Image (cartoon, rainbow, N blue to C red; front, side):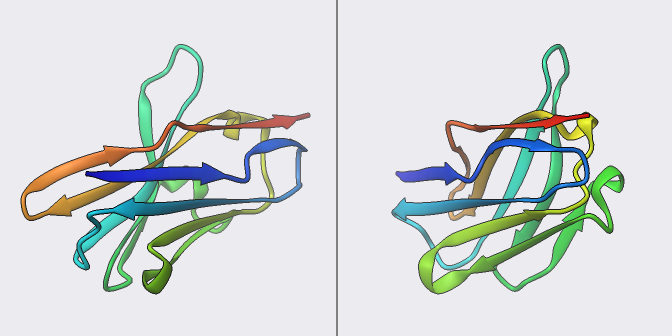
Length: 117
C-alpha cells in the first residue's frame, strides 16, 4: 500500500501563488507517475498536471504557463507550483500516484485551494 499526504493549500487572492506538496510513503516503487487532479463543486475531477519518474510532464491547457509540476524522487514527493492564480482555479486538489507493477492508482485526501477575486 501507498499513502499520500498533501499540504500547502489555502486561501489566496487572484494573481497570487501557492505551492502544493505531496509525500508518498509505503510500498513506493521507483517507476511511477505522480500528479495532481482537481475537483470544483459540481464538476468532475480533472487532471491538472502529472510527471513521470523520468521527468516527463503533462499539463492541462488551462494551467499551462502558470503551473509547474516537479518531483524529488529521493523523497517520493511531488510539488505543484501555482502562479497567477485565478478564481476558476478554486477546487479541491488531489495528489495521485500511479504504480505500474501491478497497475494501481492511489489518491490523497485532497487539499482545498480557494482563490478570491
